[in-house]
Length: 298
Image (cartoon, rainbow, N blue to C red; front, side, top):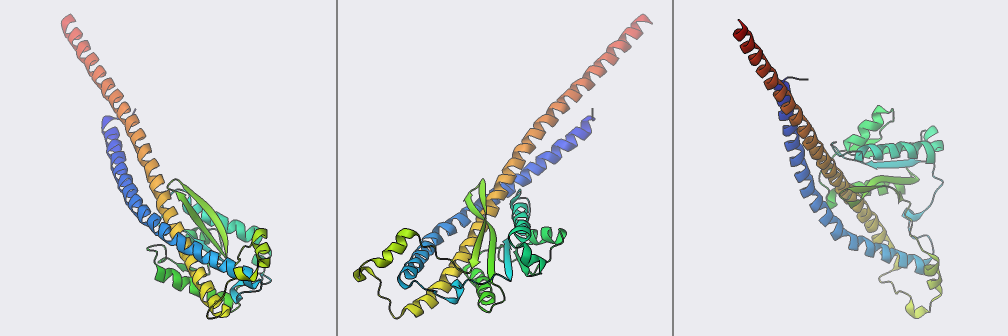
């Protein structure tokens, strides 16, 4: 059994660790609340844009814009969204593994022809892929630090430009979608080409009387040119907000578990300390009694 000094040192170390994890949990909880508020605010805006675009698709029933054009998918860009820091459980690891799975399964042929690029948002995902031997096309560490409209719009514009210029035929996003503080859903979504889903009931609405059709002013082409880029930028901003909230939720949960484990270890160490102390006292008493008996017999 370890001596009392060693056990006391371990107890102090664990208590200090718990204080750190507790502080990190509180910081993550505060950041999570802000991220959740931002998601709540942007959701209605994104949903309304999606509704407008779906209605336009029903009315026009043709290729709306170059961003909706489906191609042969020869050149692929995968955008992996992770964090710059760790201590958030398997948050980053699962995302990076999903990127590798996507490369080796869905886009295996393109990857073998070196037609798959991986752009990383967040340092941890890039580090993992580099360690596994994958080449990183680009790395952005600023987007995840503080998510803003300006940063998100600027990055999404660069993606849209790459697609419209024909540098890529498909752009995939890998990120964690926020559900609650304890649950984050790993998602893979196609950013471009833009797919506006129209179900069978909506398709039947195309045959509705003309009185129920939309009248577009100033023109349908102008509206499309304005709405689709705005929708894509808003969608990308939502992705970053979801990933940010997921990161803070994952870190808060991880720190909560770490604090609980620290409590458990502290209790076990204190029990061992008391046992060692009791054993030491018992031995000292036995030595005293034995010494007294020896003196009495002498």
